Image (cartoon, helix red, strand yellow):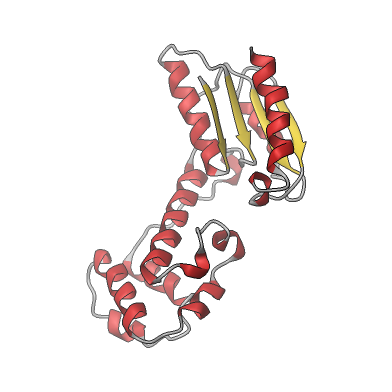
Length: 206
């Protein structure tokens, strides 16, 4: 199996490789593109999702806090997000002002954020938060017996990338590539990345 992933996809790729090895399968190569390493020291715990915590979170993005009074009567968390979507679609609130409040690193991960409607925006914000929380809580159950090929974006390098060595019995190979975390897979950076990938990963594994 030749497995690779970018960002959180790299974390998922690592766990796929670990489970395949555990099942007796062989990994031809594992490639991670700008993926933060799991590490106990960086895990500070996850806050519990509650009606209050979610309401406080969304109010950071809503310039109009009148909705807080409307939602104060809710007793169940699953009532919250449909009501917020309905509010955004029918209140006449300028959705662009909410988009501008989204942190840059989250906005870059939302497909076509400028064209996204209220429902799509809420959906992607929650998907990103859930994935980020899963990544932050992830600690591998064991080391893999495969070399890791790590592609590190020079414009926005991942901190403590060398900690991936703690999760493999074989050498960690680090290659620096041009671009930042989001742009590394876009022109003009993706072509030299692909050439380096072919040279260091595919050709060396044949």
